[in-house]
Length: 109
Image (tube, rainbow, N blue to C red):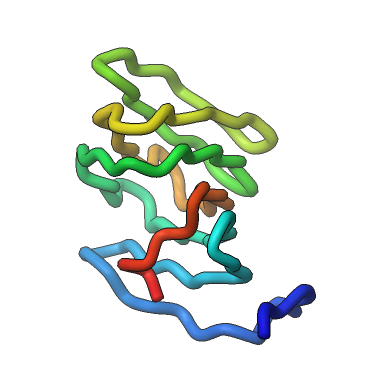
């Protein structure tokens, strides 16, 4: 059964590269919500995937690169990554991103 509600501490964090961690908040086959936390200077390496991604900067300041274009996005800002586009981030300050993916990222489960 798909969970329809989540509380802050419902899911554990998964440690990733140095200064990075993530946790899946909610998911169903068509959609997934994931929280990422970054230490200052941490890098979300350039990569691509077939999923469409939209990200909300819940806290901090990030240098975001999508398909060769780089912008600085701060708390309250958002960005969207079309399917297959190479993208990544650098945390200019400690911060958190809330990402939604469609369809869900099976590799995160």
